[in-house]
Structure formats: structure tokens, C-alpha cells
Length: 227
Image (cartoon, rainbow, N blue to C red; front, side, top):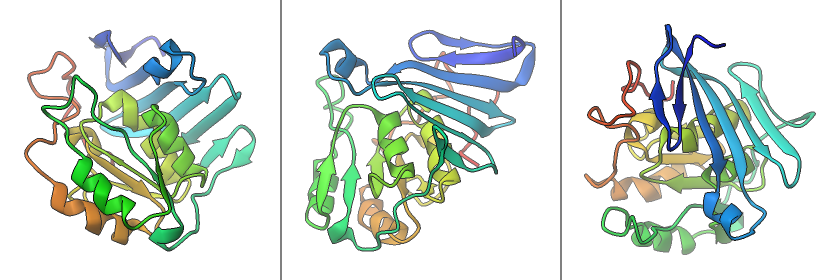
């Protein structure tokens, strides 16, 4: 679709003649894993049409795992239909998140959130790829994922795949504006209320928008949520 616009990590936004459609691309999600020889990274592509994410692909080349979804058509891992985990107790569940780096410490502090979740769940993982974390929620490997200050190219594809696998995806306020505010909670329907209730008190003014109106990544549908 050469007329579609492009939003590419580290390359900015290129508007096409068709202003209703944008490809959202992260060529290498899990960059530092790749740089250090850790085999946990992926390529991510999502299609946004009229302010909604319509299709998504996440490819992990090391394991040859292709996660994909189209709105209303379900989610798949290679040739297998995906469903989120059916677990319904936090104590039996594994959750994932990321931790602030040297570049984020002044803006992102999730230590208190982490302490609250750790006290209630079986385990927490932080493997260095947001897109794969969401893919793992969709496939039932994790029960949930949460984070803040995420960019569109990190969460758009994974959020659709989780939803098409039967999961719930909301922001910290319980709305669908994850792409506007950059904070995200993804889980199965059994744990959504418990998980969200724990995290909601941590909504603060520090939560950065995924695309600020003044950012060079702004474009006509930048104010959209994940609908």
C-alpha cells in the first residue's frame, strides 16, 4: 500500500496521499537484547485505519514465531489460534513489565507498582521486549502485562493481538486510550478487575503520552485511542 503513511521508530512520520491509513513499524523491538546477543527481540508492524488498529504482526526470528491478528478475525501464532490464559487468581499468575533505564529514571518510577503486584502474584518477568510481552499475554504464557510511557510502535500491534485472543486492554484509567497516554494494562478477563484495581492508584501526571501534540510524530489521527 504505497499511498499509506508511515510511523517508524527512530525515523519519524511520513504522511502518504491516503491520510486515513498508517503503517506503524518497529523494525527491532528489544534492541538492547539484540545488541547484547540475547535472543529475545522481534519485528513489529501494525496498521492504523481511521484511528483504529486494524491488523498486527509480531515476528520473533529466533524461534520463528509469527503472531498476527486482524480486527474481528482472531489472533494466531503461526497456524494455531491464540487464547489468553484462563487463570483467575493472582497468586497463580505471571505478569510482565519493564523497568526504568538510566534515560527514564526521572520520568518513570514503577517500583511502588512492582511492589504491589509482587506481593500478590506468582512471578514477574522483564525480558526486554514490550511487543513480545504482549504476544505472550495473548498466547497464555503470561496472565498480564502493565507499563507506562510506551510509544505507539511498542504497543499498538500487541494490544490488538491480545484483544483478538480474548484479552482485555485498557489504560490506567480503565479506558481504551492506551495509544494517547502511553500506559497500558493487558490481561485476561478473569483478572482484569483485580489487576486494574491494584494499578489505578498509580495514575499520575508523569504518565507521558505516546505521541505528544507537539511531537514530530504527530499526525492527523494522533489523538486516537485504541478502539
